[in-house]
Length: 238
Image 1: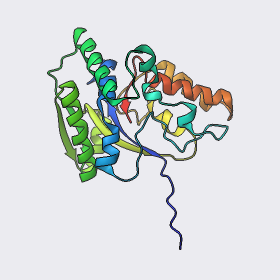
Image 2 (image 1 turned 30 degrees about the vertical axis):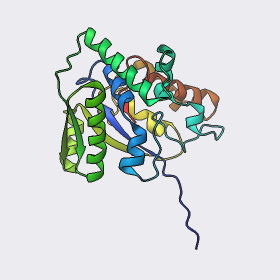
Image 3 (image 1 turned 180 degrees about the horizontal axis):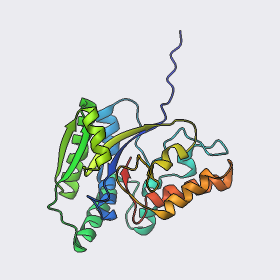
Image 4 (image 1 turned 90 degrees about the vertical axis):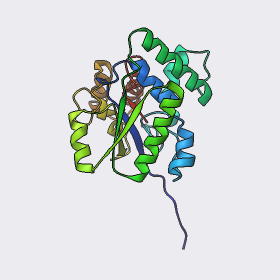
């Protein structure tokens, strides 16, 4: 018979605790320094694609257009506009900008001697990804990151207690709608483990949830994802 391989619509991502890493520039720097291409090609090796935003490919808008085409490269778009001298399509330039953002944060008082705890539930696959991220953060930014693996029940309790600097999670689409991802980071959401707060983001998502399918609803969600990866944001690293 024929073998058909269907896409799996989901995200593997890291919460960046906004209380433990309060400067958005440091959170952005962590995002920028991660070599996602290396992770999918040399670590996970399961046909995954590097994320360019929170909402993954396979989710479509009201016109059935793929979300990554509707809101392309949203992870880098605002930074690209703010720092036009850096070509963020290039990992080398992303990592250079990461260093610059960290330097800016340090000039404003960020303490680089603080060790960031990366928490994950026990799994060889999670450990390999964590090690790759740890190496990038150390080699590019010079920041110390310790890895802490825990059994699943202990780990999930720890997420709710917010006692981490970085923590992994995955989210698989419940249905074909960007809202199933984006609503996780609204103010007070039980899955907002990194304690990010943004009234502007939350208002966009709440507005989208109150609208029927169409261009206005799409635009609210597009705007929300842009807010997530702009000044004051970067609460996660997909």
